[in-house]
Amino acid sequence: MERERGNILERIDWWTIGLYLSLAIMGWLAICSAGNSFLKTDLFDFFSLSERTGKQAMWMGVSMFVGIILLCFDKRIYKDWAYIIYICFMILGIVTIFIAKDVKGSHSWITIGSFGLQPAEFMKFATTLALASFMSKHGFSLNNDGNIFKCIALFMLPMMIIIGQNETGSALVYSAFFFVLYREGMTGLVLLATISAVVYFVVGTRFDEVTFETLPTSVGEYAVIIIMQIFSIFMVKYWCRNDKTFVIMLAVNIVVTLITYWIGIYLIAFDIVYVQYLLIAFNIVYLLIQIKLRKEKRNIWVCIFIIGSLVFYNSCDYVMHEVLKPHQRLRIEVLLGLKEDLANAGYNVHQSKIAIGSGGVLGKGFLNGTQTKLKYVPEQDTDFIFCTIGEEQGFVGASAILILFVAFILRLISLAERQNDRFGRVYGYSVASIFFLHFAINIGMVLGIMPVIGIPLPFFSYGGSSFLGFSILLFSFLRIDADRNLRV
Image 1 (cartoon, rainbow, N blue to C red):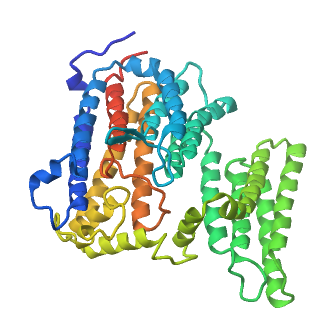
Image 2 (tube, one colour; image 1 turned 60 degrees about the vertical axis):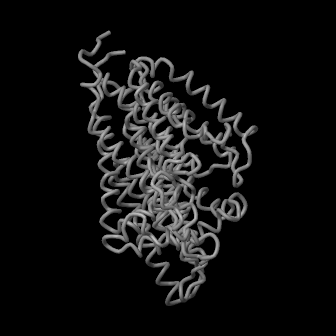
Image 3 (cartoon, rainbow, N blue to C red; image 1 turned 120 degrees about the vertical axis):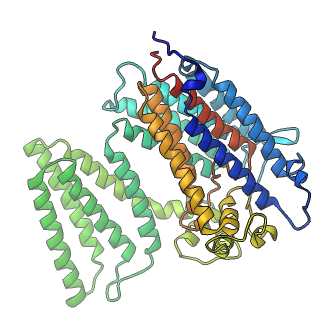
């Protein structure tokens, strides 16, 4: 065992600490703006524990105190206690489902006096530790399918628990761990499958009821099948590296598609999507023949991708109308432009856009936001805190916050890359991925390019559990980074 020399203060990454404090202070000022009213004139009101600004300031102090304590722990403690911490928080998450009060349909908050704690925020830390510990064991490799499934199971369990608490948005954050697996060598097929699923759902749902001008064919369904063909054929080229198979499949699919389209337009109108399904079937059969004749075993993954794509796409309609709740379905329909509902599902985003747009280039000034003071935007100090920044600080101020966040995330990635062992690297990339997903989804949600799913903006959105959870993730990583030359 090799111990690092020197004082811990000399080994802490102070650039990251500086970015953290900058975001925390700016976040608190944004909450002050969002909670400000024409009646509040005393500066000390912002520090009153009866106000959200005061509670947030208290949680900021608690979080920084906890962060200092975490910096005192040896790196080995994080690794040795990883599974115990994981099990304890999973049990707490399950218990929360049964003891938590109903808060807007969610059972995710444990009430302690006048304060509430959300265990889901701390389950991210526990899952990150467990995943890093598991992936750092001797002989671990993602080339082993069993290891991949075990890693996925580690973060699927908290996802299921949080969904049980009726916090679907928080559960989606755990998909950030797929970035970590990809960084550690997982095949890009999983990433392709994820991107494909999003494309199939958006294109198929958005254009499902749109038909060609002269053909009884759904534009959405036809486009999705064409995209499936493109993805699968180019998988043969770049994943299977079978040039001959690629050329034959590409030629057959292009020629048949063009001839079918010409016949449908100029000779006899019919639903041309059926021909594309036949081409899909041809692709599968041809790939299976190549497996048998030329031992091109990788073709089987292309077949699985095609079949999985078909199953996923044809289940989208069922999920939309039978699985999703009415308000969730409405949010997606509003986002995709299928419905306009400015009084209900689209109200928050509509008002958020007005607030951001009204800020102009330089904004209206600190505490001078009219949309903010008159409470036009619901949840303006939590999920929609960024609209307050856009209104009062304008394009310049909002851009500065975005640049600061990007610098913060890139710094975390840089720290993760300089780790000398897999435990530190996996933990660092997990932290960076979680921050990135929160940042990207929240900003996208406020700007109306993503569904409203209740994801807080780190260090900005009001919430003690959120701030403390993010701080624990960060300071634990800073301690692990400080001990990066410690062999365990």
